[in-house]
Structures are given as C-alpha cells and as structure tokens.
Image (cartoon, rainbow, N blue to C red):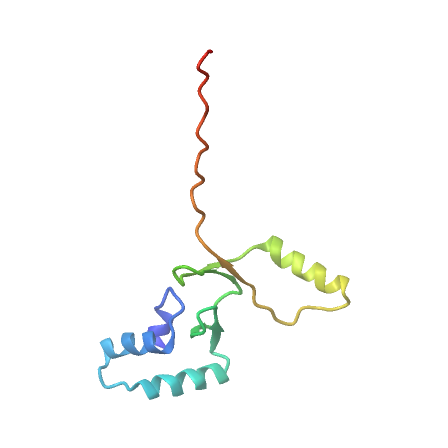
Length: 125
C-alpha cells in the first residue's frame, strides 16, 4: 500500500512488484496479486483496465476524477471537470436516473502540428 500511495501514476501489478522489491527484495509477485485482490475487495483500491488491457491500480480514497489515456504512450492523465460532472447528472436525470457511480475514460493522442500550406507568390505577369 505504501508503494501505491506514493505512486503518481497508475501502475500495474508487475510495476508495483518492481517498486516493492526495491524496498524489500523478498516480496513475491504472487503476494502482490493476492494483496491487490484483497485491497480491491475491501474497497481500498480501484482497478482500471485501459485500452492496453493491463489492470492498473490507484487508491480509492482519492477524490473522484476522470482519465485521459494517451493511446500512443499509454500515459494516463487525471482531470476533474465540474462542467462534465454537471452534464452527466443532467443527462441521467433527463433519462429518469440518478448517478450512483461512474468512470470517464477519454482515449487521446497528442495533437500533431498543422502543416502550413505553401503560399503562392504572385509573379506579377
């Protein structure tokens, strides 16, 4: 839990094992998997499975936020938007529901610089 609470990213079990064994080389990967399952079961951890298919983890105690997932690098950016939260509630109400829980994952790629069109020069002819 210490390793996960110190993580600024969303590590998977293999990455958590790598970080944990830097502290205690005797920790087995099986222990990591068992501990992750137990902590998730108890509601202490949240599991995310983004486009790469790997289960990634973060503390469930953190304030609600959504995710931008870079499809090229796999990096995950956390963000919070009151406008999006309000819009989701409005949409749910419009359809006769109230939101109990939700996760928003937006898959993105970096913007590519736009190429400028060559300007035509007037030859004066």
